Image (tube, rainbow, N blue to C red; front, top):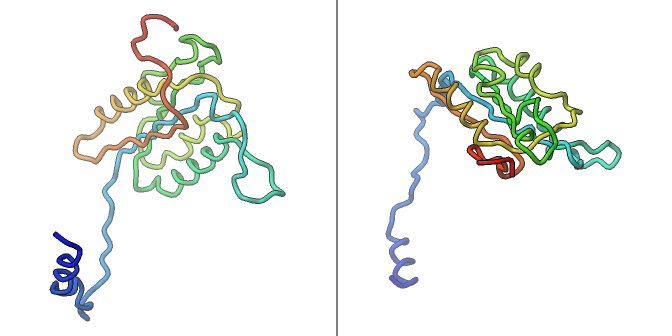
Length: 179
């Protein structure tokens, strides 16, 4: 079809809107309670380097982890009454900064199971905003633990995962050796 034919056809179509009837009302829908597992990368790369988070040259730069910590705690606090937040971190706090399987240690189950009003429990399990994190990125292990926890939850409630990371996975889940 030529451009001229398309233009001609467009001219013949009626307008998509014809105005708003006076009987329209604003509708507000309540979101269903959701089991939302936060799957959070807490690998060493989150505390390496800093950035200007606020565009103000007179304030200190912060790490990616500091920014994420602030964002997570604020968001969970705001929505904890309506959503069952849970927390699965990878790697675990036992991970080491080595080129071995010790960098990929991950808990089999979440640090915090999904529940309403979970902001304080999640904040208590998150490393502090100024933490120096260690370990690699065993993303598959984190996702598997979160998925198992969600499957064990109520089947009649929506379930979702939110994956938060700063890079690609670098731990093979079934690696034959530490290489």
